[in-house]
Amino acid sequence: IEHKATYGQVVAVPDGDTIEVLYEAHTERVHLLEIDCPEKIQAFGRRARQFTGALTMGKDVTVETAGRDRYGRILGTVILPDGRNLNRELVKAGLAWWYRYYSSDSTLEQLEAEAREARRGLWRDSHPVPPWEFRRNRR
Image 1 (cartoon, rainbow, N blue to C red):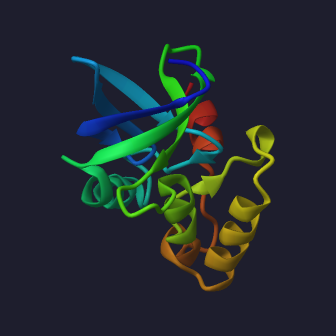
Image 2 (spheres, rainbow, N blue to C red; image 1 turned 180 degrees about the vertical axis):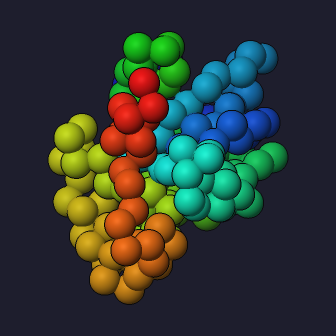
């Protein structure tokens, strides 16, 4: 299931940047590539999860896979039934950071800059804490 498009129905949305897809009679956890949503207990974390759920829950999505992470989750880009890219929609809505360390997608960079400029979502906060810093500080 590596490096190809897979199709499946979204059956769970644990958080903003993770979905569970029913694929060939089993559930696969998919972590969205090149973005990072706030953690659930951070500002906008629950909002990001709701946004992802509203766009995906119960729907058939396409996952363009790019291997797995150290937790065994598929890393991927999720294409919604209407053709929009979920990863980009989250950044555009100000509900995710562009994960620049792991990304070469200049569109994500541009969408993040636009969301920040418009003070959308998490960019309303004067000092939003990136989730990777938040996780590191909690260890």
